[in-house]
Amino acid sequence: MQINFTGIKNVSSLNVTSPDNRMEAVVLNAQLTDDYEGKDLSAFKDTLRKTGGDENYNNPLNSNFINIVGQRVITDHGIVTNIILNNKPLPPQRNTVSLYTFLAKLTRAINTKPNEKFEVNSDYLTSDDFNEGVILGYNLNRLCGDAFNEVARSIVYPPQVKHGATSINQIVQDIMLDYLA
Image (cartoon, rainbow, N blue to C red; front, side, top):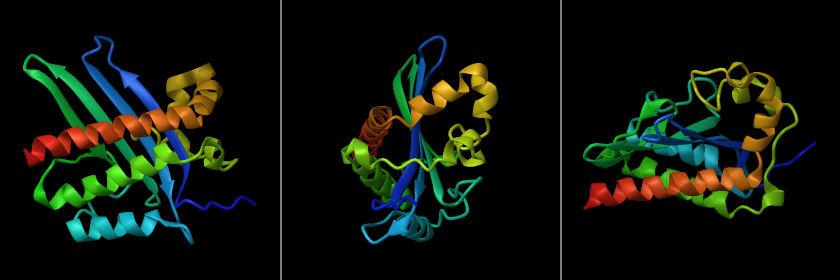
C-alpha cells in the first residue's frame, strides 16, 4: 500500500505544439487528495464553491482530478495566453482570481516536490482517469497507438511533470500580470 503525503498524486504533463508552431499547449493532470500534510482536494473544492465555479470547473471525468491547459498562441497582434481548467476556458476576472491563485500555488508545489516523492499508483496508467483524462476529450491510447506505453511513462516522469508545472505557473503569472495592470 502506498501512502501519499502531499495532497497531490498521479500527476502527468504533456506538451503539445501545433504543426505551424503558432500554438503551444502544456497539459497538467493531477489527482488531488486530502491527507495530514496536504488538503489540496478540499482547497480546490472550497475555491470552486467560493467563486461559484463548482458546476463550471469540475473535472467531467473525476471530481478528484484537476486538468489544467496553459496555451500560448501566436497571432498577428502578439502572443495570447489562456488557461483552460477542466476543459473550460478560465477568463481572468474578479471572481476567478482565487482560482488563479490556487493554480499558482498548486503548480509551485508540484515544481518544488522532490522527484522521489512523486506517487503514481500502479493502476493509474491503465485507468480511464489517465487514458481519457490527460487530454480531456481524447483517448490517449488511440492517439499514441503503439507508442502508448512509452508516452505514458514519459508524461508521468517527474522532470517532465515539473517542467509542465513551471510552464503553467508562468502562464498563470503572465495572465494575472496583464489582468492586474
